[in-house]
Amino acid sequence: MIKNNKILKNTLLSSLIALSAISLNTNASVLLQGWDNSGDAGFGDLALNRNDDGSSSAIAFDSFGLLNFDSGLNFFNNSYDQFFINNNGNVTFNSPVSTFTPQSFPVSSQPMLAPFWGDVDTSCTDCGEVYIGSPNADTLVITWDSVGFFSSDSSLTNTFQLVLIDRADTGAGNFDVEFRYEDINWTTGNASGGSNGLGGTPAQAGYDAGDGVNFFVVPGSQTSTVVDLDTAPSNTDTAGIWTFAVRDGELPGDTAENPILPTIDPANPGDYSFEFAITDEDPIFIDPEVAIGYDYIINSGPLFTSVLLPETIGDGLFDLWLWDLAINDWFDTGTVLTGGVWYDFGQATDRFRILGIETTDMLDPTNPTAFVTGLRFDGRGIVNLNQTALTTFVADPSTSVPGPQTLIIFMLGLGFIARKYFSTNK
Image 1 (cartoon, helix red, strand yellow):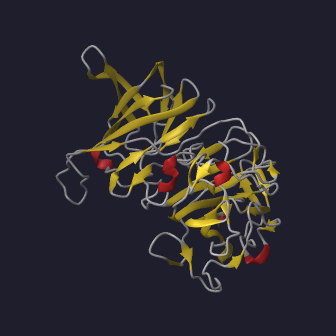
Image 2 (cartoon, rainbow, N blue to C red; image 1 turned 60 degrees about the vertical axis):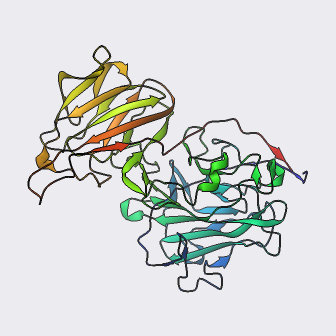
Image 3 (cartoon, one colour; image 1 turned 90 degrees about the vertical axis):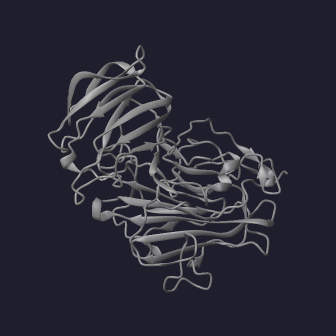
C-alpha cells in the first residue's frame, strides 16, 4: 500500500530499562498503571491524538513534573533534555520520526529507544491510544495501550510500555530503562509487507545511540518470534520485562561496575544466556552466577584472546584449565591467574576453565553480580557462548551452596545487528 513517502530522518533512541523502586499498582501482567492522577485509562495523559505515523512535539524532561534529569539524560556521552514520542513504538531525541517499517540498527545519526518499532495505527476508533504519565518525579512511563496496525486495523492489538527512571543518585545524567510487554499479538503493518498483522518485515525492539557503533537489538526482533516478547525469557526474572542501566553515558558491558547481565528463564532461574556483539577491541564484562569455578565455551563467533578475573574474591588467585583435543578433556595448565590482571592466552581459544574459588567465599549462585569477568575476543561479530558454573557440596548448612550440581548458562541475551538504513514508502 502506498501512502506519502516517508523517510526516517533521525532515528535514535536513548535509554534502556531497569526495574523501578516505585510503589505502583500493576495489572495481572507487567504494566505500570493506576498511580494517583493517572487518568481514566490508568496510564496518565493522552500523548498523541489518533493518527498513523504521527509524533508528539518536543517534550522537556522537566515539564509536567516528569523526570528530574536536571543535568540532562546522558546517552553515550550526549546530553538530552527533551524527547519525541513517535506513534510507531519508539522515542527519539533529536527530532520526530515517522518511519513505519523498522530498519536494523544502526540506522541514522539520531538516538532512539524502541520498545516495539512497527507500523502502529491508532486512527481506528476501536483502537487504543498512546499515553504519557509520571508516577513520581523520577519516573516516566509511555504506554502504547491496545494499539492496532496499519491500515486502521484493530483485529489484533498490542500493549507495551517504555519506562525511564532517573538515577542521578548514581551520577549526573544516569538512568535506567524498562521495556514492558503486556500483550503482543501483531508484528507487521500491511505497508511493511504484512498480512493481517503478521509476516513481512516484523517489528524491532532495542536502542540505537546514533553513532553507528553502539546499539542493541532484543532477541526475536524483525523475526516472527517478536510476537513472543510478552512471554519469552528476558534479561530479568520476569518474562515480558527487559531492563537496562545507563551509567556515565554507557550501557552494560563497558565496565566491571556495570556488566552485561544474563537472560534469565523464569521457569528455570539457574539457566542464563548471553549473546552480544563485539564491535571493537574494548573488553566486554559479563556476570554469571558461580560457586567454585566455571567453564567458558564459545558456540559461535569470535574466540577468546584474554580474560580479566575479579581481584576481590578469596586470595585473588585462580587456576587455568584448557581443553586437550587429543584426550578430549580438560587439563590443568599449571598457570595461576591473578585477579585484576589481564591474562593473554597467547593463542585464541574457544574454551577455558577457571578453578580455585575458595568454598569459604560462598559465592551465591543466585546472585547475578557475584563474579564479574572481563573478556576480549579476536574479532568483531556476534558471539554466542555457554558458561557452566561449577558448585560443590559444603557440609555446614548455614554456609552451603547448592550441590552437587552444575548450572548450565546458555548464552542468548543481547543481540546487536548492523545494517545499512534505507528509506521506505507507504
